[in-house]
Image (tube, rainbow, N blue to C red; front, side, top):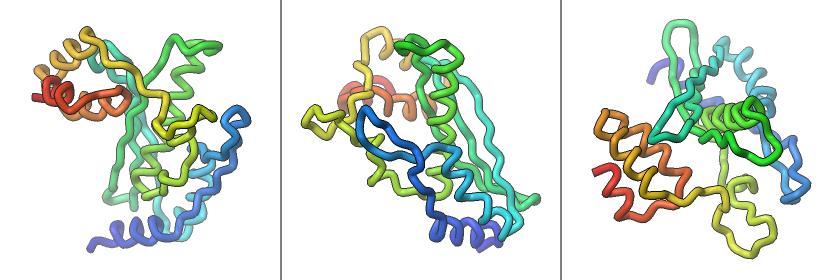
Length: 182
């Protein structure tokens, strides 16, 4: 096992990221990307490693997504994890910049969570029902015939991995997934 892998393993098993934010509407606490970074910094100093966050905006099937990369580096090599978040440019009460920033923050948080194995099973923002009585997340969009067609085109253009990740943002049946991804 490389030295960087040993460092990552130690950070993954000892990092505790406090849920320092509060959603008063849903009545739950959650952690932001900034909360994760605050908890992470002492580990970076201890192990003499750095974290780099990078992003790109992607168009997948006519939908915009932020793809976030979190890379742990010792200066010679790096280990990277990614995450995607859809951008809702029509989000009520948000400008385009705010909607993009919200998606950016979300993607960063989950890229960091993927890299450092932060436990999301107890994270209420993933399971909150806003007192609607069921445990299914309500943020998934319906998959229209137009979006299916655009995603099939994106797969045909060689973007199968990106489309597969983007499908997590939609209500998708097994037959639709097979139709889109082949």
